[in-house]
Length: 442
Image 1 (tube, rainbow, N blue to C red):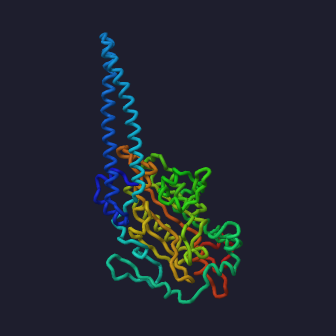
Image 2: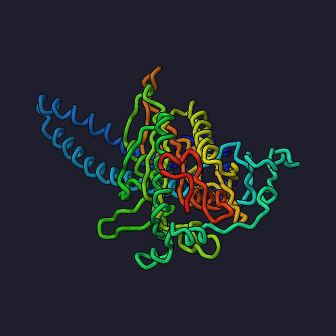
Image 3: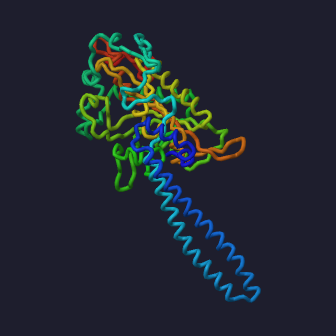
């Protein structure tokens, strides 16, 4: 969440940022927080005054008793007792007001960086890079790209759901029988392809210096709150009501929460973690072609990379994460593009976000496979994730970053569709052959 310091000291910048994210009634929300903080300050001043008075009276009681001034001592004792009662009420009031402030701040999204383009929806995102040969720089001044993937993929191809059925790789109907729609069953070489991708992604992350974590896939409410899934995305998460736990939508949640309520020495930063987990998303309201096959699932596998860093170095960390994800797609030989998301299409918690999309040759559409975000101090403030500066030992908020490296379903779909052969088989990307044990799926 945003800090009160940022809101009060850079009010105009925060308003402009919230407007870029198309947050309604930005000024009203900020003014309400400021007013509530002034109420907190008034309570604190009264409490401080009472504590000072009680402290002075306590010192005088001994003197009164020593001088035989019993009546004055009794009056001082009575006043101290009265102040204790008043102060308890003030403490309770201050705690209630502070919680109100936190609740209000939780309803205000993070503000985007200056580099984030204006825009209200996905159509306003900037395509900043692609490996397609036909891409040319657009006519606008922002460096947007105009890509025509169909020029490179003119032949109609089978969609991945037909290939999966023909080669007995994925059974969508069986998943419906066992659980429901959005829970496919991988079998044979389809299951092995999943495992090969997991091994490949984790091995590449390890080479890049990420420590592998195997976290729980169920988290408590504090963890969901810490990374911003709660209360913003509560409706998208599976809730275990008896224990009040949540199935994770991404490994970002448990891995980032490792550093909740932790003070890290600056010399230990940046911290680099990666994790493979199953992910669970309700995806309420999804329907049509967007959810067919592997396009949108309720349960899927994903490798996540997470960084904890200093404010001065987090932009460099973000660039390194983007390069890492791009390198994975290059090694897999998939057609991809990179988008810088506009303010209106960014997540509630991110300050800047880049999406990676792979091209579906059969569906003639781009499929998102990764989002790589810098959250600035927004998550860290909720998590109380801080670091101790080496120079002056001051305690400051960290920056948190995360990205998919990568999510498997649409990578599998893109591999199947882009590597399918005229005879109905699927060529295995070279980097996966060691784990697949074959160079062709047939």
